[in-house]
Length: 245
Image (cartoon, helix red, strand yellow):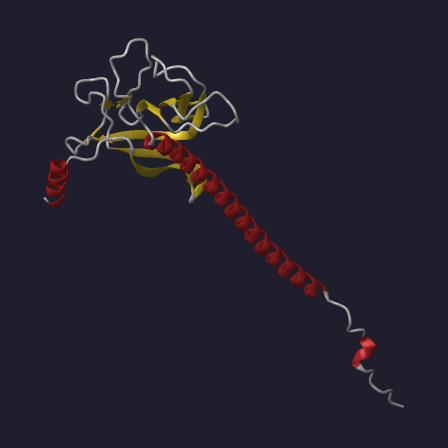
């Protein structure tokens, strides 16, 4: 008597073979590797964006502070009084790392009823960056008292790190020309303010192609001084002619 053939269900086809398990594990490994790579890329992008935001904020804060003080720079007309304070506007050309000190009306009081006014002495200069031998630190000194020593006294605080260039140029309202230095105590600019100041700030920023490296990033801003003389019309005409040549 012939026995009937067993149905496919009787052979236990619900399990996986060794080959199927290996293939499944391989697929899971590829998916995990792709997911990890995408996650690592997202984390690196996040870290870069955070660093970029911090860098841009640092540069913007430094430029805003310098611009605010420069815009309200002033000089007193009484230069011959005895035993009085001295206001100056002196910018020294240091190749790519300049120095500047001046009096400003841009001081902001931080404490109510404090014995302060809107006047202050400001000094801007750079010193070597202790964290980066290829860069400098932009420093600001603000003295709440204007005296006979316009380049001294007052607390010092850093404005920006990783500075490679802090270059200033001054627009002479009489000639309409830009100059690399300015001295309100000298014969060329006697008790005069420049019409505008051009600020070039170059700082080291993370390289988007290689986060382990740094690359220079440039910022340029021109600040008009509120209390300076207006630009001479003849100088404006000459500048317009030069621009068309």
